[in-house]
Length: 432
Picture (cartoon, rainbow, N blue to C red):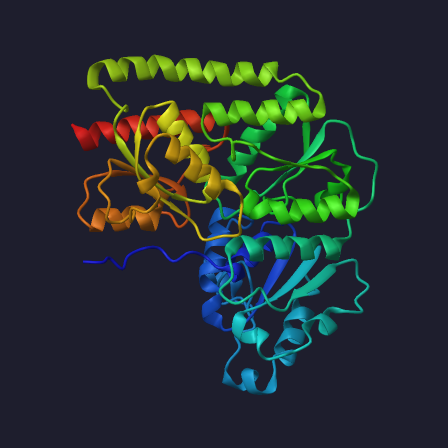
């Protein structure tokens, strides 16, 4: 029997909203029906907290509907016939009294069909607040496409200054507030680069304010961490400012090997010495070895355990290589998210061919027996509902609702240790 519990992949509208919501001092206005705002508002507020209060009465203003983020024009049948101009104008008057540095009006797919000239409503303001309209995010397009198009519109609106690049300064592209542990992922990469003698200017979409993004041309290099969410942005910045682009050979630095490849590749491009960063990763690797040696001597695991993955192609590739190459685990099912071409789908296929596990790409993730699954919370729930005895490791949204209080990261050497901890504890309960 075919299961119908697979998670629906977020589309280009969601990508566009979270791209702009990842700018600190911004207000995203969703020009669309009320129902389109609630999920996006809730996720943005939980991922990137800007307000201490969660009580709906604190956000009783018109257009907010009890939520702190992403006010909506709540379009109805009348607006689809006569246009949304009146509501858009009203919400812009309200937001003009706030302390935002950037206001973005994003049309829902339905609102895009009305044909209102939203850009015209935003034009002619001279109050120091950047504004732009994204009149269409594409219809059922990819998350990464909407994400990158929206950030490109941000740069066009704020007009970063053309400056002489600073030696050893980089931007990190492809990070997003829609990623699990995004703040600590960024911090983990910044720490590794700092050990090499490099500094990070900005990570667009991952919490920088408008003033920081205006300095993006100061970087001597754009490092594309997730090509699904950063390649097109890198092309834009290279075209406008001449900043060279570096796409990581091993994908996102997840696991020890990919983390070492990350620091070596960036350091080589900038002419820096990666030794201190390599030493940091080496200490984490030694700590992992002590735990693994004892664990494996008693249980023989994790070697030979089955795993499944649902993630972006670049992340799935890096994670698969680490789980197989470092831990000796066996891929059961690997499902890559539908998204813009990253180049890592072919790399993953070639690598799986080399270990004679190409079938893992065709196996349905919800129906294939496995011991541990790396995915979003909904996919993990789906496997449990299908009766599989497995453990789940959340590497993406939506989550199962676990509250992370202490700092966690999936990237860098600290991320490798966290994943190893979850793998070892999970397998112990599944296979014993």
